Image 1 (cartoon, rainbow, N blue to C red):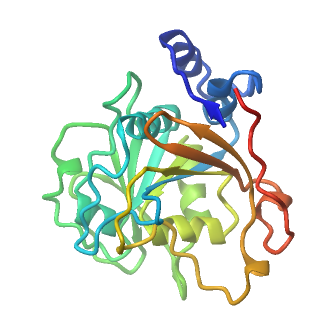
Image 2: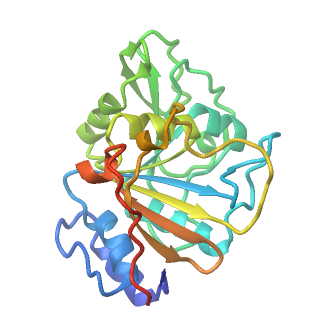
Length: 268
């Protein structure tokens, strides 16, 4: 397990690398191995991030999701926000958590905030519409009521399974937003994984046991473990949390039932 020991110099190097398309990875340095592929991606990169307990929960049954991740886990999430161009969440996350989706735990730029609000359920009273922060984009179905709340609105055709994640990414790319963080909720992350659009999945596990509550990725149930996703993964310690960096970009990383072993990075 490799330790993430971020320094001001390394962080400045990563911020300068944003969208450069080169200098992608120095596997000898855990910080660069983990973050450089995100920072340097130029032609499109989708990262999904989940912070959860030891027993796989992201909140209590009543919806309390605060303080699951430790301080280093929160810093990691904010680093990911700073390195991408846009962060995507579903409407349920906004209604439940009222997040700002900004970069506060580290120095860096705030990403454009994208909310998938298929049925135009948001009221305009949510904090992200009123905090004067980064721009907000609402993704709405083409048959939903038109409610912008002062945000940019992208209308997407609604199919039987809902809004197409690829159409969402295409619409964001047309606006110059190609490095994307899918932050929640569980069904939103699952939709992008199911569509084969996630390059890397970060699962940060904090040392607490909640006992019951929602899981972080709501994929459809399977009958046999042979059908499970078995991505190649490297494991890092963030200090308070343990991070699994899962590669879903290759056929081997995203295919189910191939029997690959989880690959643990060398000891630091």
